[in-house]
Image (cartoon, rainbow, N blue to C red; front, top):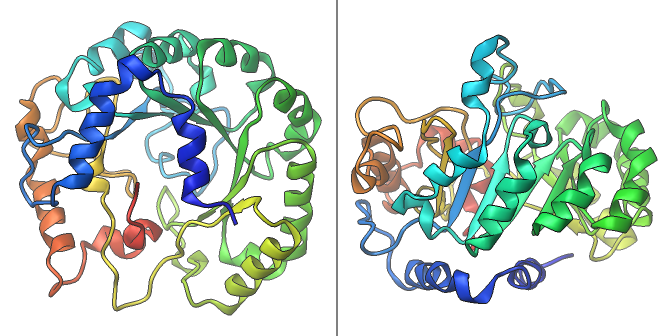
Amino acid sequence: MKSKLDYYVEMGGKIHPLHAIPKVWNYVKYRALAKTVHTSIRRYTPQIASVLVTKRCNLNCEYCFVRNIINRHGAAWREDEATLTKIQRIFSNPLFDNCLLVDLQGGEPLLVDDLEAIVSYLVGRGHIVNTSTNGLLLAERIAGLKRAGISRINVSLYDTNQALLERDLSQINHIFPVHMSIVLLRSRLESDSSGLLRTAQFLLTAGCRSLRFWMYRPLGADPRAHEIIDDALPAYLEFRRRMDQVLPGFCLWPAAIQKPPFQKRCPQVWQRIGCDVTGNMAICCGTDMTLQGADSNLFDSAPDALFNHPTLVAMRKRLLDPEIDPPDICKTCNLLGEPGW
């Protein structure tokens, strides 16, 4: 199985040493200082920035966590789409300035015309820059993203894009090897584990660097609790054993969803900050909800007030107190027991 060390080595090799110094120092402070309910930006700021660079997508997957907000048609979509100028405004804010890692998310990021310019700008500032894509447009954009200095590309594999990726992946990986991911639903795990193994074998042969199985979370427009994979499901444990035996070192396994009693190790409400290009702030990566009320927009709020929004403070309190349950939105999130990086 691939380890976190493999990830750190890969990402560390992408850092621009001089420009990354403040970001690495910010990360060191985060690791050295205890987590507190109220967190001043004078102690440290988030290490991971997630930016929703578009709310458009050329797929419409029912379990996508942003399906509730994407593909709203009309002229207003341009306001929600990233440009280099909009990204520069976001990263001038102290909450984003020293993030070591930047995830460019969607929707489908490859629909953004300025994507290569955005990547080049962020890399020049010393950020590690990742993006996730469905890959439909990747063959025509991969060379430009490589020139821009992209650190890592994750391609999400679905039934709707598999035929195109089977055609293009070898060519794409010849230019810039990508990582793959599959959302693992209980129904597919129990009915088609052999098919998943064949798919993984193809991805390895095509030159992909790894395959990550994301655990399904009941989010999006049609949450389905029956598709949850918990950490004690026999079919999951056997599937994981078989995959690691046949394809050693290729698969990445995020934690499955816990059953009570919960291990509350998730650092996301301290470590990650996220927004769309109009400044609306995400709560965390485990929900499609955004912060509401006062101090919930990046461009209208003092950084300290935003980083200590009442919703985030309440979540931190529940995560830090060993005597109470985690927040409700955390109970069906597989990252609740993950300590982050």
